Length: 200
Image 1: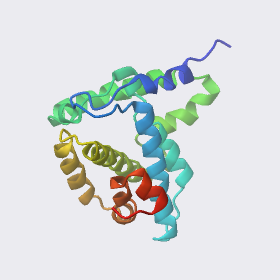
Image 2: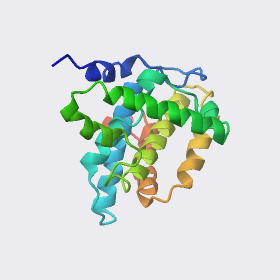
Image 3: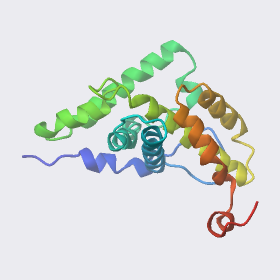
């Protein structure tokens, strides 16, 4: 059996910079973003299960989130204003993303491909209920980035912060509201406040 390139490609996420049109105080790469999205997606499902008595597979949701932008290893990060400029451009970019997903999965041994095809598929069987949680986690990760940039004195992300908040306000998931109420305020605290309980 010939060697597989799949994981060598996946672990190149760290080389893909995000927020290319923005002047940030610190860098943000694809690997960091996917990890953060996975952590938040798992949290949202846990909120759903413990607070709203759902039966969500939090582990599966974390895996979907971990790979949700993996195609950008091949396509690069397309800035949101460009990606969503109009429906035609969005549809064309979706075709590019689908082709990149097929290219990545094709690097796997045949017996493993079905597992990862479902992860990369937007219509994976049984995953429909989890996709909104991944999307919400993606938006929350973007909002947290904007807050952290703001805390560092950058005004560059104020528009992106407002857009992220607006998108999250339209989220149908009460878990998103719960996360914003209970967890988001801490992202405006410094290390002493977080660890020693000092008041802001």
